[in-house]
Image 1 (cartoon, rainbow over the protein chains, first blue to last red):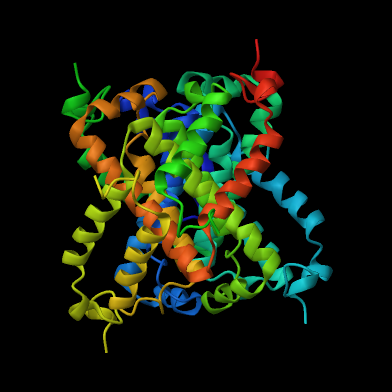
Image 2: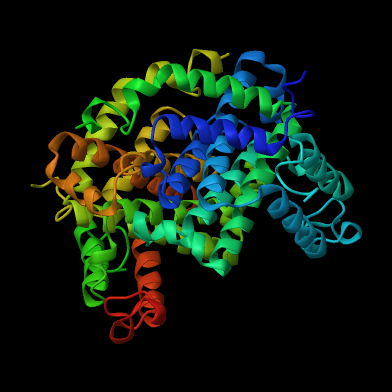
Length: 123
Length: 123
Length: 123
Length: 123
């Protein structure tokens, strides 16, 4: 429980990644360019689990314990490299995400975009 | 300060994304398949900032206030969709990342991999 | 007609790309690492057209003249960078594709994989 | 020789892919959405070969027979799926590439962009 998302700060997880990199002296390989590639590669490996499924079938992964664990592992890689990049560049993610969500809320006002992405998607 | 990574839990950020999606009734579009695509697309947009730079030059982005902000915004998108996927599938990210880092530590023992990725990269 | 796939060799298209790069002296930026990133970024831009569609709806793009043209343009970018990478590394694509398709045919014998990707997908 | 890029038309390679798909009745899985995902995944696997290399070191892959063959195989997958998508959507690639290169030449006039991507990259 003390290890769940409810009680874990973003910094704690970032530190986990920072320690792992420091213990191996891997910062030399962790240029932002390289880490951005690693991140994109992990995102593709995550996508691989859903590649040939219909959108509906992809929801049922939540009920398949084994595949869900595999997806969780790929997602951990994606977020791990996101934290590694934030570490290398000194970006505060909580601020960045909050700022971006404010921008998104202005771009997609809830009352205009409820149930659709744009005028052309509406009923 | 109360908004920084040091004091923000993963759940707080996940809730931010969950609320945004719920207010727009966008969960219907957020099948794991679709969200994994969105994530990979944002990862590519992040990579775009480093595409034509040398690995060394990519480190200097940290000193360019404007580009750093742009990179931070793309990274926010990547992490935001990661949280959206965790929300749809009910994955606890803190547990998943901790479990994956233990696996990584076993795969890459610090004493064997210090300063290199494999035997062939060593001196 | 003399410009269609039926009468155009792969080399002719590769030369088009090679000339474009040479005229701008861009080979210096076209390291395989950089071109592989450019290729992945274009692949993501292509994917963007299908991101929020169901698999079935994505087929109907073929009937939407305007979107089809936009997709064709992204696909041209993907294949263009593929040719650029083949140019930089001196890879003969026709040989590589023929060799890979022989390997694929051995991995997925037609009589075993008709209508399914694996035993678990079958009826 | 009769199998090289110099003597192979784009249509011949596209037909190779079309036959492979038809023999397995896989067109049902080849919605443009799915194929665009497969393409992006293969592009990421290609990128994996260059992920931790400097841009300069990535050029030396051309001299490493074994890695070059592996890269060629991934590139074959990327181009193979590009052809599969063109087949599903009925896009003539030679026309699309020629049209896009004319557009690119207008966007990046050779005399203005020689040796650089933009004014800010120049000397």
